[in-house]
Length: 93
View 1: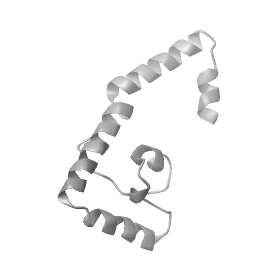
View 2: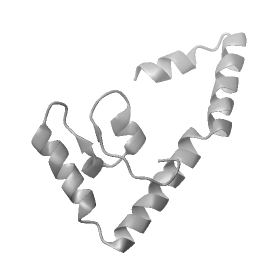
View 3: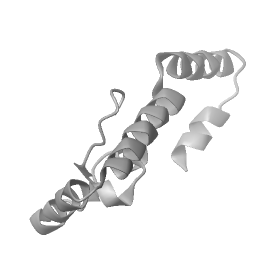
């Protein structure tokens, strides 16, 4: 995705959250669903392909860039130093 390649995945771990497109998430152990997701992408026209490439690249840049992750870790460690455990509570939701 960081290279602008839309990805198809099964609904395991954080794939659904990372990809954020139900057209590209297949249910676990459902071969027909996975095939359907592949067929959806194969039927994209040139404009849709371009749009999807842009969207996935932007999503990764905005949510998972090294700068973003660094900032999140830094804020997390600062909160631990201050005995602020709200980060733990937020992650439980």
